[in-house]
Image (cartoon, rainbow, N blue to C red; front, top):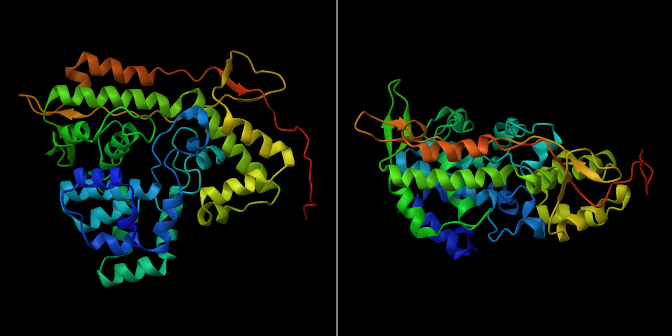
Length: 360
């Protein structure tokens, strides 16, 4: 069955909001084995697998990538930029940004992006399609080249817009429905700034304020105590299983999250399976101003994701923080979120390695 014929009806409707026409040239690229691997990775950064996060919507890295491509297509109708959006997360490993945590990249969360070109070039199916369409790989492996696809924080781009819309649709928390998403999305147009670069811009202040309100609520959920604890726990599990030679770096890119979880649940070293199950079945975490003794605790920072979009005014486009005190305060809430506390649950990994098998 073709991918687009088997997706959830809500996601299909959502795609229709992002682009009234689905560009047919994308379909062959979506169906390649390398892109299909992204369908087994949740955008929730592994948090989908714990009851404490109450995530309603399974939303894969592939669905996010397609949605970003549709946003770019809607605003540019440029085939190359659209493909760059489709491929922008092709190097996303199982558990997504948890692997950035494993790599010590807590605040930028970009450590896996270096593999993007490598994975595209190594895909004979994608390279064959690019050759057919006469598109050099140099044009599509780095979506940072295209301001509508991606730009620097706090500007609005296709990537930031899409994950805010889908995360509020239930991928992180159910906040709005497709009707409100359509209202927000249809209020956005492209303006050319003084330096000549294009950027998305809201036409209506009230709609932009609502977008920023939801974005700021989501921003805190991306980095709250439960999120940081879950991501660091999965990162630590992956690191220890790698040390035990139970998984490899290629496994992170070749195996589904379901397959990785099966490996975790069979692993008794460091009490890994027990700790994972305790987190998966848990409903809350605890906090402390000091490091708790005998407990697995987390005290790490996280990437502060926020958007300060442009809004049209009589004097030209302005950042919403310049013209709305409400939006400015909402943005500041996420910027002021504290990472000072230790976050923990009532379990701990063994301090000493308990090897069931000899490591050669």
